[in-house]
Figure 1 (cartoon, rainbow, N blue to C red):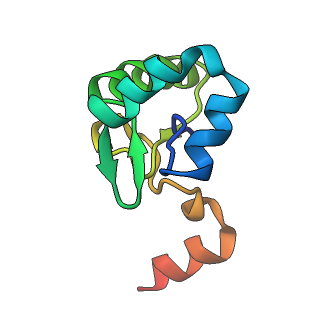
Figure 2: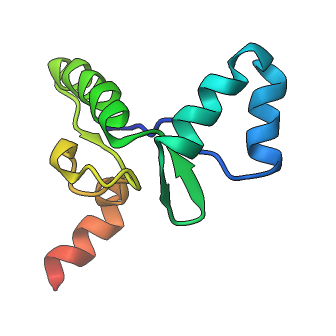
Length: 101
């Protein structure tokens, strides 16, 4: 199973670290995350269309190898082919206990 999530940022230190690493992208990143992006919980994410495109491409590549795929906080459940987003369904003890319920 593969779980993927594009970079999400929080205002302040998280965003500043990214901009320090890539100063030439500050305007572009500001537009993507703060103008066009969306807030999910306490973080800023790329615009949904960007996340769908990137994660959709990765999903196809992963599943071509016969591996299940998940995203957790992206709000893109249609891309999910794994039973859980974090792989918890793969833990043997959890599988046994869920069958008992």
